[in-house]
Length: 180
Image (tube, rainbow, N blue to C red; front, top):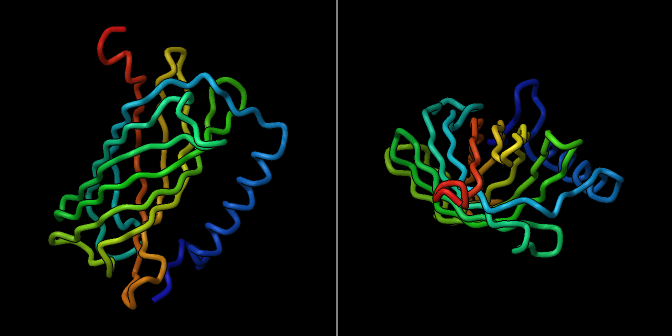
């Protein structure tokens, strides 16, 4: 079964277009800032939003500071869980693309270990996540954003239904949590 977005657009085609757009943006004059701190990001939203096993999802991520960049990319680690008991621990990279001072587009990719619990079986314990976050950046560097992510095993297992999530994320600078 092939995963499709509403309107019949295959997820793979959507992600290919998104990747091409990212390459264009990174190579264009859109500024990429190097002053961002480390973040603790918390999210809540809808898991398996396109398919028939929709449930609630929660997520927590640690996003490293810009000083820890790998070329253009900032690493992160995270954990997500659904109301049906599915879990996913992951690590990955993202790139912040700024539109002015306030708006930030962050395409990202991660790999991790998935457990379906009583939820959707994605076919493999090894799963990959790709997606994008679009966020508003406040004066204190915190962000409020909306994310869309696709998780699948990229065909390493015969069963590969994939899933999509839409989340509301709040990212607070890690040093602000401890009064610095």
